[in-house]
Figure 1 (cartoon, protein in one colour):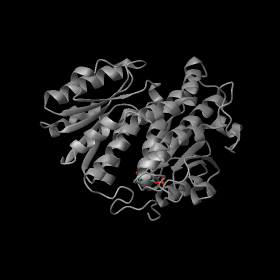
Figure 2 (cartoon, helix red, strand yellow):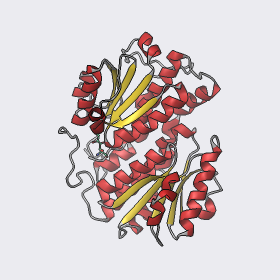
Figure 3 (cartoon, protein in one colour):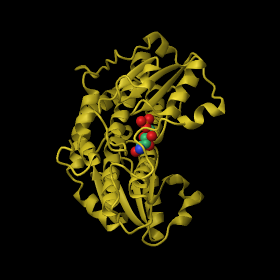
Amino acid sequence: EKGGYDYFMLKEIAEQPKAVADTLLGRIDAAGSLTLDEVRIPVSVLREVDKVVIVACGTAYHAGMIAKLAIEHWTRIPCETELASEFRYRDPILDRRTLVIAISQSGETMDTLMALRHAREQGAKVLAICNTNGSTIPRESDAVLYTHAGPEVAVASTKAFLTQLVACYLVALYLGQVRGTKWGDEIRAVIRDLASIAQDVDQVLETMEPVRELARSLAGKNTVLFLGRHVGYPVALEGALKLKELAYMHAEGFAAGELKHGPIALIEPDLPVVVVVPSPRGRSVLHDKIVSNIQEIRARGARTIVIAEVGDEAVVPYADHLIRIPATPTLLQPLVATVPLQVFACELATARGNEVDQPRNLAKSVTVE
Ligand code: M6R
């Protein structure tokens, strides 16, 4: 049942292009419009939404952090993303015009379930993004958009994460569509790129051998840091989470701009630091800022592992290891940038002799609060 792979995780990483394509299937029509008929929340209600709140845990929370950027940029509706386990304990401000999005692969995560129950009690509408048909979270929500990743067996979430991102982009674009916000050339281009993004994920998978080699060479290290800005920041957090849960290594993700506010003190000679670089096209300020961050850490001896778009030459002089990803619109970049980090963590775990599919102390679905 592992389809010839040593681990479910490897199989699930390889299934990502299909999972992404399946999650898009039938949801974008030939004219580039979104048809999310399954979202049973009436369009009249969606037009009135004045705030979006996303609740989720772990990897799904990282998808939610990226969704916040997409929703705010494409729809101009204020959006916040919160860890489900923190959400209801701060007495959040919610009402009938709040759309709460609960993201969960399993649909059984107790923290997320309790957060959505609390939201519904306050009168908010809840949309679930879920991978498991008929599970508790979609059953208790007003509507559900299913991700079509297929069963995910490995404890470490991979293909579910990519499909959660796809579902989040679809919801963000759909909200923009029904409200008529910013519906111009930029959005049309994003929809076109999204429709063909599975091929880009496939392309990344074909170039992973150097990443595996690099991972094996780092098996004796104690710490790996991850840096990113904007959408690259949640990707950095996701890379660090994968490494913690699989390789049992100290791994931390930082917003690159925060380096100078403390974490830069951690940099010492030969410390591996993975940097997720945003596209030099589009918002180039972001790109320039991160290039100087790479320079700063390298000047202090860090071993830089740089994930950057094909054709981005500015990073070359500062990259000890360069991992290339295809060019995508900025907001879609996590779909390609996360894949090398999954492969990296899986290979490091294997090199350290860890059980990849069943990491110690963890369960696939966390049904206690
Ligand atoms: O089933 P869920 O998506 O609600 O699970 C949430 C987290 O428990 C989950 O993403 C966890 O962080 C993964 N093991 C990460 O790889």
